[in-house]
Image 1: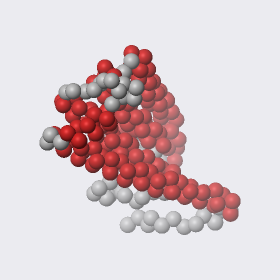
Image 2: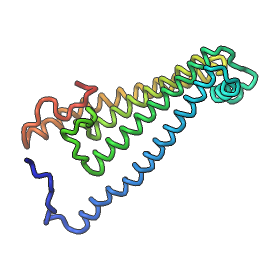
Image 3: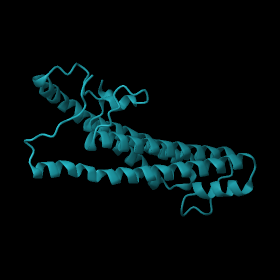
Image 4: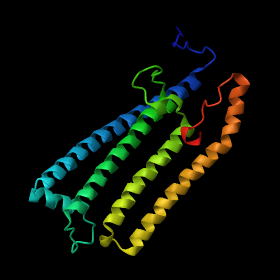
Length: 218
């Protein structure tokens, strides 16, 4: 069995050791994101309860949903279709789930990449993406997650397009395209840098043909 204990490096002096230990200052930040995750879970269930109550004909729940999906400045416009209201609430729930997934990637991937290894190798519940996570893979995955969230917001806007001005629709579309182009640029830069990283790894030991290659670029 491989000994996973790492002895202290006697060559590391006090200052480098202190700088290296400063990475633990990020732990409270990840704990704060876990608290934000709890808030999203509570928000999800509150919206889900309102959706179920509205489906059962509760007028108060329907009014709450109408207010939650209303656009500021469009008080004179009211969505009458129950189907449209349900669709907007469901898209809102999907949006909460996708943001929650983004938080998980930042918390788990960030801790594993920048703070300390979790020693999950061989664990039955280890996420597939965590087995080859690094800063580059994390950037690509975060970019694709943001595109997914932006897509949900854009879809909600188009479903509820009567409440938005053409200028607002135009700028939301431009922002979404900007996110898409940014993700493509990140993936392209990662592909350009990949041969250099592969050559660096091969200089020390054989890393295998797929090691370190982001899943999105395979």
